[in-house]
Length: 424
Image (cartoon, rainbow, N blue to C red; front, side, top):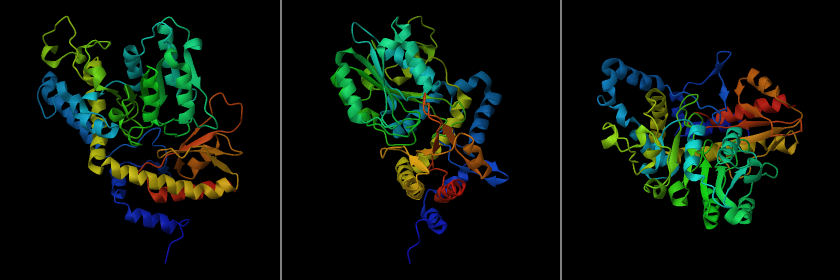
């Protein structure tokens, strides 16, 4: 006898068949009124792995025991600490290990990468971004243009979405229209607001055909969707680790630089001690000798304690296998969309996320404003509310992200059940 897909029994059955389900117990689930919350906010801050404290304690122990000698001794000497992150990050990004390095924070890395890859010259000055990008990206890009003595109002091309969707065709049409005036394309691989996944391969190809450089903000993409940056020929990218990678608030970022740029010694870099060749680093030479990998963009030694928290989560990703996570993510988010169909039909909500998506669904809730989030929280649900950029309309959008590592089908069913009651 088949089980009604709208029933709690169906959700519980899916959880029993889910081979990843036991990993939920590897994370701390926040509580509301002494009961585990329905946490659907991993697209903003991922949950803490229970192993994180032991990873931190291990490095604190090394520091206590060895002091400065921890740079050269111990299980993971700090001099090489960053190197252990490249293989798991390369697996998530679809890159060569030498193309990635763990360092800094996202917007810091954005500026470092733009210093290398935004080199306006003659008429090739323009940067193409999405108008609905995360504000920090907009601030950084504006300031980079101004840094070169140019006017952001003239050189920044912000492509507006239509109904919260930015089609590949529109992006490519804009690229072709800008042609040899386009210096750089900088887009979010997954839009933070709508949850749309861009076709990064086609966009990269189109931009290269007009002679432009291409970079992506992968804050909402890494650990969420399949990436193949090297094969797609993307020039550079950066991301944060505190969303889907569960690496603590303000957790350490990373960068990707295609090997053709990293291996080219004339590629402009803002140089620092940790980017020079290791064998020369402690010779205190006055001249900078860039490592022929993404490591040459490093400025300073690794923030070991922050990176230890990052490692705790990445080890779980390696253990589970990203393909399994992607498979569950598609099922979980499709299940959420199916349960929401009734509310869509009744015109109580609208799903603004296009079909090209990761785990996030962004929901416009009719007749409700930001206080509605508190009503949900009182019922044990944690998610967030965003107002469209410069919108004069009264509506806002809930971003709902069932994360496959620690969210369940039962979480999704309970959320929709609560939402329906509150919208009656």
